[in-house]
Length: 95
Image (cartoon, rainbow, N blue to C red; front, side, top):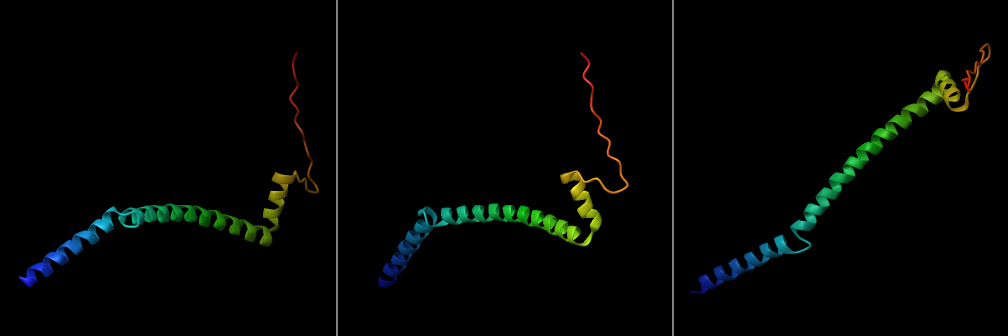
């Protein structure tokens, strides 16, 4: 008779612990929310890693190659080199 009460008590305790695990805010729902947040953060980190790699490659290219720096100066600053002629084409307005 005593063994039945012990088994019944353990069964009630197991059900109570399972209910707390599945129904409480700190249980399964919170774990799922944290997993989703980690997944989202990993995606953001992958994008940032990709951007950082591109920026690192550009920095190395600018430090090592004169051509890259010259190209950047041409596109961003309008550099015109020696022995080059600048032509500006202007559209005429017909009235």
